[in-house]
Amino acid sequence: MSESARARLMSADTIAAGGPAAKSLLHWPERGSVFAERQMRLRQLAQGHAMADFLRFMAELARAQHKALQQSPDVPLPDRPALERADRAGLPVIPAADWPRDAAWREALRAIAKDLRGADIPEGVRAALDALDRMNDDALERQADCLLTGVMHGLDLAAAPLVAAALQVYWTRLALGVQALVEADAGAAAQTDGLGRLSVRIHDPGACPCCGSRPTASLTRSTGAASGQRFLHCSLCSVQWPLPRIQCAYCMASERIFYQSLDAIDASAEESSARAAQAAVQAECCEDCGHYLKIMHRDRDGFVEPVADDLATITLDLLVSEAGLQRHGVNLMLLFGDSEAVPGTVPSGGS
Ligand SMILES: [Zn+2]
Ligand SMILES: [Zn+2]
Image (cartoon, rainbow, N blue to C red):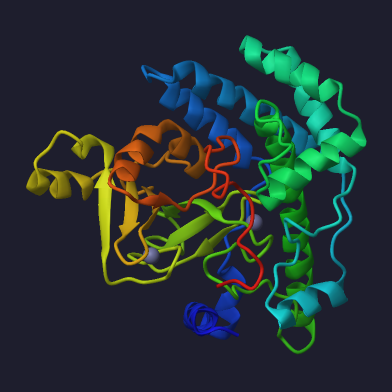
């Protein structure tokens, strides 16, 4: 194990210190609201926005995802030995790149496509839907492989957000299944020796503990037991996992972090840092490694949603990338052109 991997593992252990509390470490997606809240937020953000049409289409897509998730069937899950093996090896339990995908994800894609055809969508999207219709199962699987392994070559960029939307529905369904397994195990164990044995632990705090994908953004929670805590939001399976505040999600350094926000663009440096301290969406920038990840504050705006607010603040990406910083967040709905920096997973090995 490399030094940096060891350092990450130690800091994950620090987070996880406290034994039984580890059960509540992850914030699992809610089947009834994960995509519905995104849809609502996108419609809210679209009002008066320069990219209103794009955001409204994204809202339609989130609506179709919500419907597909409600209708999604049970899917094959990792069995108990597989969960235990993954935990021992410090690997994600439903890895984005390697998990044997069930045909259910293609059914979700077809349901989303059918739904969108009946909606008010841009012409370009109709062309992408036509292109998807012409693809057989093998071609669709190749599109999914490209998206999940970060390979741009061969990826149909117009169809990619639709394919990604179906993969998000499928992986969110998988995550919900894993949550049910872990909670049932904890419940059964409570009847005997009081200790659940199955768990999804954080081995690499920079990657999703469930599927190994990179985060879209981070979110500070304002209510409940996790109030004030910061979580990273998985770009694929919607699971959220904790990371201490004021820490770089890429290199884990915490010494030279600074924040940028949109409403500070025209302000003086002094004003800028004062206003950035109040903004609901900021770029958390790291001078050590030159990466940034957006952070969204629920205590400043109770409706912020990682994927929606990321899409609505692309100008912030332009601002910080002009300063030479590199985006760490992945948003499968919006692939940036950089052939290296495309979606999916943190390379295995984790450093
Ligand atoms: Zn994930
Ligand atoms: Zn860093």
